[in-house]
Length: 418
Ligand code: GLC
Ligand code: MG
Image (tube, rainbow, N blue to C red; front, side, top):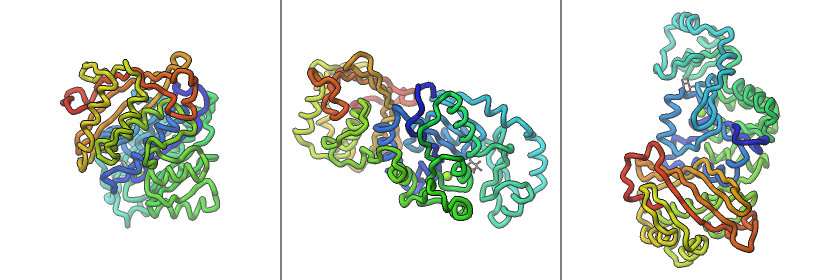
């Protein structure tokens, strides 16, 4: 969070399963739409928070299965574990707060008395969370006796824990640092997300596919709160819709723009140039854009003639040759479930008119995923000063360098173009 020196323009706090992630969409389209919107318009001045019931183990599994972005804050195990940044550094203050009046031994002993409860997997038992499966018909009764909420999953947490309390704690912490986000949007689909919507001043969106238990909670508790809506779209599509309805900022995903040459930018950032390029790259290899001279010419026109690309294998090539290479691959991924997304796109102005954009670029082909840390050096076109603020065309690609991400090291690199 130190990344931002001033309050975030928007903080999105989203549940994962059936909210950010649509398990019924093998193409992950709404998630990919959200990803490019976030990297294009929000990453540089906003905060992304995932809040999931999953333990760190199951969260990491989901990251391998789905094209999830890297959040600034990860709240796991139903609000009982808060971590920061890429290294997922734990919040020890929160651990101390939860330890208060919590005795794991007593919880295990008391719950052991209920034959209706079946313990969940070992990975889901955490220092401040004991989780069971319970038959829906018995859930209410058992939950009442244990004075906890019920569902198909039953989580026993310390008093003062839960997704809502974790968010309240995070907001308080940000406020104490003078970085209370300008707007916060909470997103969810099920019962344990309800508390997210009870935090004062927070906008809330229940995705269209929200579960009955959440809708019921809403009807009984938040029906007259105009800050909470039930979206018309599923999962991440609903989040994009809510950003628009609450007027929290741009909500046109670059993925929804069919001709990238036409894609004009409000609130621009040099990072947008990269988001746009890799989207074009995906469409080019999927054969969704025409194999036309105009595209190649436009790409070449935005490269410095002597510009170099350092391939992750270490081989060097001119940028112009790289575009020629790309031309040969038009449509080669047609019908191959090929997707490209970028993560953590961050631009720094290193000198007046010069930007370094750093990002992770991911490529998925069928079940295989490879990624590269990418650095792009841009300069403003001579005589055009800061025109990039209005038109991407004011920027020149000077140098591109890539190195394999940790997970991609042992993979075959012969098919990686850029
Ligand atoms: C996730 C967790 C599980 C928990 C459920 C509901 O599925 O893995 O332990 O019971 O969320 O909070
Ligand atoms: Mg969910």
